[in-house]
Amino acid sequence: MFAARAIEQHDKPAFYAELCGQFAALLDGETDPIANAANTAALVFQSVPDLNWAGFYFLKTPRELVLGPFQGKPACVRIAVGRGVCGAAVERRASVLVEDVYAFPGHIFCDGGSRSELVVPLLHEGAVFGVLDLDSPSFGRFDADDQAGIEQIAAIYVKASDRAGLAPF
Image (cartoon, rainbow, N blue to C red; front, side, top):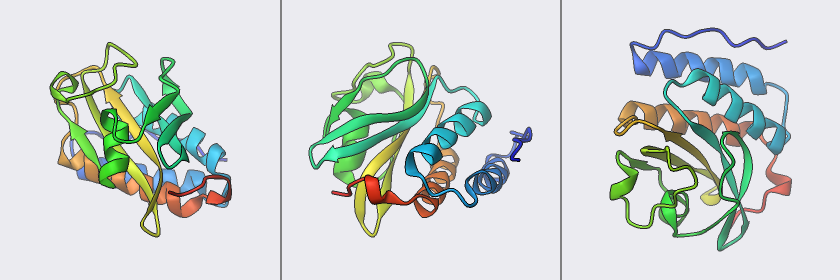
């Protein structure tokens, strides 16, 4: 049985390396994309400090993301591609790190307590099929080390999960 271990947090690259190791062990042998998304959201929310939301949105059409498994307050259910930070990450096919959500044009305020956000697209063979979204109540919470670490987490999730039920667009 998997058991998360506390990770020293003073060195972010080392923190994310350890978290990725724990995460790979957690998903080992499981291919269901929804179960894996639920465990990803739970482990990230539990392990990464200063978050108020961690979860997934999946593309249900080429133009719309729909809420998936998450940890935190109830969230917006549908987000148009190109709208908000999640929609921008899909449109750009790249991670979007926002130090101050109030300065991001078109930011969607699902939780008024969020101040910064990091969204990583889920890519398989060049196609986006969703995003991993992290919110923090602190301005400037995320940096390049967080982005690199969460991109590794997203890559482990994509590799482990059978996307048969998740249409890529």
